Length: 115
Image 1 (cartoon, rainbow, N blue to C red):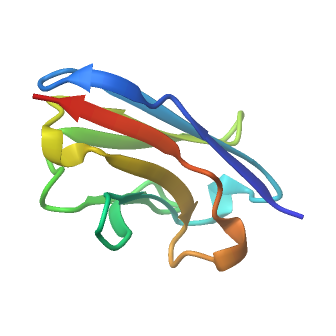
Image 2: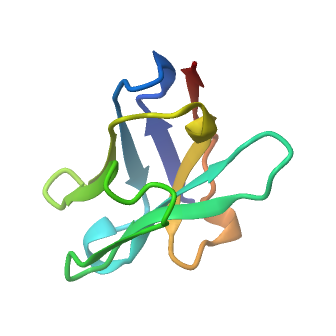
C-alpha cells in the first residue's frame, strides 16, 4: 500500500514564501515523473509543476518564475519552493506521479495566502 504525505503548508502574507515537502512509502521518486498539484475551492485540481526522472522541470504559466520543484533521491522526497506568493495561490497542494494515480493521492497540505 502506498502512502503519500505532504507537509509545509500554512498561512502566509502575499509576497511571502513557503516550502512544501512530499514523502512516500511505496513510490520511488527517482524513477518517476513527480508532480505538485493544487486544488482551490470550487476549482478543478491542476498540475503546477513536475520533475522528470532526468531532472527536467516544467511549470504552469501561473507559477513560472516563482515556484521551484526539486527532488532528493537519497531521502526520496520532492519539494516545492514557493516564492512571491499571491492570494490566487491559495489551495490544497498535493504530490503525485504524472499522470496521477488515483491510489496515490494523499491528504495534501493547505496553503493560504492573505492579501
